[in-house]
Image (cartoon, rainbow, N blue to C red; front, side, top):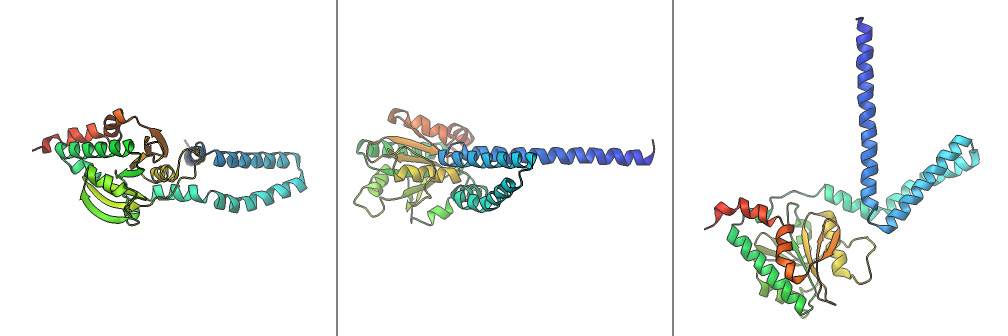
Length: 271
């Protein structure tokens, strides 16, 4: 076979691989965009508007509508700037999540007995807060560092105790606003503040619920919310919020923080 044929064949294979990578990246971008907008009604409407403009651009190019094509080009050129402004909160949240520092999950260093004690104290505290309709925001750090948010609060570094939770979230204390952050078996800080979500939520959800969803959108942490109005308990994780019955709180909490997996790994550490 001539050398020229081999070179041509190699170039053809290389071009096919390049096209495949190019198409795959485009589909990845579209997938990320769909994931970004699918849970936000406001963002979804804007995304539909962008698709409509692109379809108009395609039609004007096909039919040679010069004036209309010029107007659409102007809209697209200025639209890029407008999109950056409109989607600024979503873009910021996505970049924060990408740049989030990975840390060793603090729970993995605990023994089975220590984990059991932490779980029981959290459950007792949350149930008591729910019964008294005391608003609360409790975040359990996982594999992504919450150091930036810890810096917004007041350092405590105390053992996880139900009495401590009741004291912090009592309305008469200066620390009752904001969240407490738990790292392993320690309450690292209180009165930490989170960026609220930009999702469209029901009016029944207040600032605590918006903050809980907000931190869950930029980290893999689990946040427990107790409603001040109803005493309802909710979990916020991965950008979603779901209510948890008090009787199922312990089992749901263990599942959410991979309790069973971590307990099995830490079994040989028990005293």
